[in-house]
Image (cartoon, rainbow, N blue to C red; front, side, top):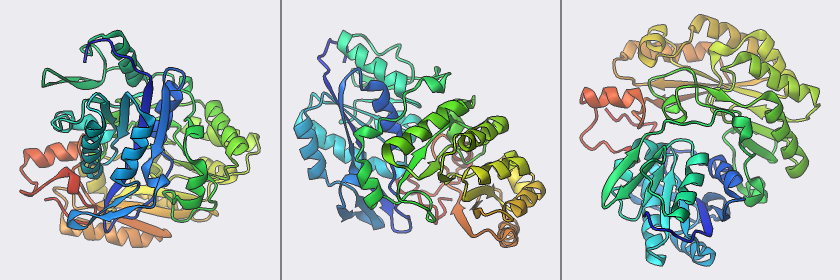
Length: 435
């Protein structure tokens, strides 16, 4: 892959979902490939296909799994028509990789010269395994805007990938992994997601966003920051996005909201940051900017809000700006588990107090809890259940602690040989223990 190549067309595919029966299917606008498209649109002719949004096809798969989104034949037809030089796919969840593998194999049947590049959380932490699939050529590790741009430029120039940061590829059948060391420091410099290349009308017709209590079908997801300063044992955010928390300016965030309102008629924003309030003063400035611009929107935080960052002033601003729901990430109702096992910087007493204050507002509350951590006792799990009842949130989610790739939890489970013999990342379930 070091000879000069004519690279004219890129096809970005958000693949069909592969989900288990207990999973709630919630399609949403794919921000990752939309950001890539925003950066690349002036560099190369490109096309986006959002397979879950553009087709209602469903197929029952093995072991209780379902393929949801465009069928293999529908995807093949689109790619044959597009005639791309490169197909890029995102793999956020390990359960989707079998679908990506199958699509990659189909692409090579269309034309073995088409390059297949994948990115996302799973391939970032499992590059050797993912590249063991012959139909997958290379992987973009971590955030991909700069890497994929340089990848295309190096292809055209016939340059080696040996110095391409955050990139995994095959060199004479040997897998080479260049670690991710460079990150985009100024997130304001990144163009807004290329939503004009997405089937925006379909999301309002078919899509169900993360929140089950949405106020408007005219919604859009947004991300205002990357990463998280906390290093919880179950989460790979800081490993994927880099150890330093980075964020967009309040003005830049408000400008994107304004574009969403003016161009797409958006009435609801779903902030999908891993930790939008990590920098409390910036968060306050964002919500104050929404108020100052008189944006008439509603918003929530489906990925959760960091309880240790909240105070009454911030909650008041959130409500005034349009917040109608908060998902509170307690993870456990036992301080010992939170502090010594989960390693989350939460004081449960203070978290309980701010939760009670939130409940005095016109804000719906949900809560996240995770049980079944290695070292957690039955009594501690029961304590979490009692705590959840005491919090009286409108809804509480309970998940099994899964050892996901890139997490400290996986390293612990692996080192202590705690995983079941048939353990497979691709079949993880939030309702079944992997230990």
